[in-house]
Image 1 (tube, one colour):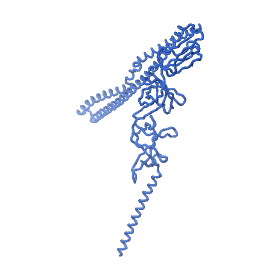
Image 2 (cartoon, rainbow, N blue to C red):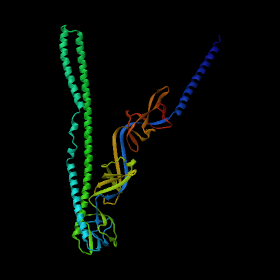
Image 3 (cartoon, rainbow, N blue to C red):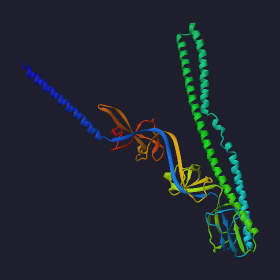
Image 4 (cartoon, rainbow, N blue to C red):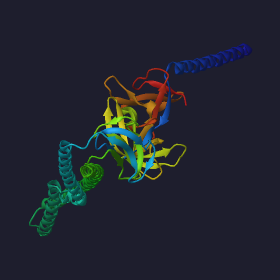
Amino acid sequence: MNTNGVNINKKKMRKLLYIYIAIILVLIFSSRTIYNFSIPRVTVVMAQSGWITKELESRGVIEFYDTFDIFAISSGWINEISIRPGDLIDENTIIIQYTQTSAITEQALTDLRFNIERTENHLEMLNLNRSDIQRRLANIDYEYSTPSINEPSDELRNLEWAVTDSIVNLETLQSEFLVTSRLVAAGVLPQTDFVNAEANIAEAYLSLERARINLEEAQSTFQRSLEEAQRNLESQKRDTGNTLELELQRLDLDIDRSLIDLRANQASIATASNIETVNISTNRQGRVITVEKREGQFISQGERIATIGINNNRFMLEFSSTVSEAGFIEVGDEANVYKSGSNIGIRAVVYGIIPVGDALTFRLVIETDQFEGGEYARIRFHRQTGPHHIVVPNNAIFVDAMGQHYIWTIHSRPGSLGTEYFSTRISVRVIDSDDFNTAIYAGFMMNIPVITSYSRELSVNGRVGRMD
């Protein structure tokens, strides 16, 4: 036998086998690489708990919250106007002088007396409304106290009775068990009666335990409902109190204006004579907002001469924004207002929201001594909601043709050559969102990978590759 030839053949076969195995491995790895490039590539983030932050900035002009108008008490030609917009004026400052064209007529006196009577009746009505609001504010604690919410429901009472019945039933069966055990021991009853008695007691124990568990769950649910009802009552009480306070402020302003009208009419009657020159002065301090007339013009009785802002450290600011940007703002919300060139915020409160088409106009009241009226100011709203159980980036939220929100997540499993990833679609309910993140309810725990971008369309349980 030629042993050398056999050895050479074995070496060739071994070499060919190694080459074959190497070719197979190269084909496997190259085919997997090509396949990985053919599947969607995704980036993911981990779903976390967190807060949703909403912010809005705008600008507006600081205006006086309380104003009053000055009217001409008769007709004539204006000789002199001694005020200009922006002027600070004191009480009894003469603002206009004009030459009266004729003495006040009897009809004008009748009109003045009628206006005085009408104003007095209006003042009486305003004071009655004011007293009613003050009474409601004084009794607001009683109005929003509902002792009935502390009373347990019929279902809770039934569960308590079920526990009592189970205890009574167990005690009865225990007494019967003692009698049965003696009779069985004496040979009067068979052993099966003893076993049945034990089984009845065991079943009674289970029934009692179930009744107690049901009672505890119902008590817990009742306690949560009670706390929620109390929170709702507190919220309603707070909102009602704020509304009543704003209404009281409005009534006080109406009363002040009516008193000004009343005194002006009373002064007109008191000074009704054939004087040639009329001087009109103010009875309050303030800053001139507008002047309606010029020197040399003719002014008619009852015509407005000027509008004065009352300098009582109360101002208002108005601005407009879109519903999409400012829809989260509500009456009673607070904002910071900044003077030009200052980073110190001054508290402001929203007291009115007026829809205008697709936009909203907001009115804020500011109580401070830092403004003079007429300045430009910057407004900033900042609100946080949460903490929310699940918060994801906005680009992780998708919407289908039916308007249903959903997200894509990935799950993994071991593969022949490493970990393989698959995409899963999950429907979600959007709770809140801001410019960057969205809070959702999805029925799963946080800390799962959520897809934020992908290279091609995804499919349910389809293979994906991670780019991170």
